[in-house]
Length: 113
Length: 119
Image (cartoon, rainbow over all chains, first blue to last red; front, top):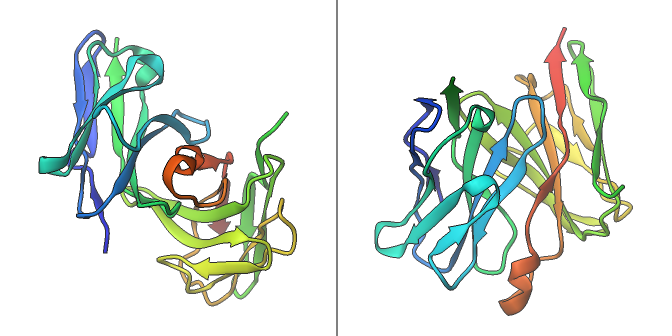
C-alpha cells in the first residue's frame, strides 16, 4: 500500500530563515505529488504539484519542491520564510491517473518574528 | 462564487446518535471525497465517489455512510457505530480521474471543514 512520510512534525524558525520540509513516499510506479497548506482557521489549499516533466516545481508564495525519484522524495523549500508562513503543511501522493490521495501526517511550522 | 461548502461548521453528537455532515460543490466536479483530520495523523480518506450513484470505501470507512444522489452533493453520516467520532472532517472534490494530459486537471479542492465533537 502506498504511504507518505513527513519526518518533521514541528518546526520553529525565525523570519528570513530557510525552510526545507521532508516528504518521502513509498510507491514504485507513476506517482503524482502535492503539497497542501492549512493556514490557521483557513481551508486546505494547494501550494504546488508535480505530475511529470521538470522535477523542480514552483508554487505560490515563493515555495518550491524537488522531485527526486531515486530517493522517493518531494521536499518542500523556501529560501526565506515569513511570519505569515506559519501553518500546517501536508505532503500527499496519488498514483497513475487516479485521484485518491494519500496524505502524510503533516508538519506544523511556526515562524517567529 | 465557486467552491465547496461544508455545513455546519461545528456539530455536536450525543451518545448513540447519527449525525449528517453536508458537502455541496458548484465546481461541476465529478469526484468527491471525505477525509477525517486528527492531530498528528494527517488526513485519512473515509469515502469517495467518482460518479453519481456510486461510491467506494476509503481507508477508515467503518462507522460512516455516504450517498451520492446528485453530482453537487455528497453528505456524510457519522453513525453510532463510530466510537471515536471527534475530529475535523474535510470534504473535497476534483474532476474525474483521467489519463495522460487529463491528469493535469485532477487536483482536489477542499471545503472549510466541519468540527464534530461528542457531548
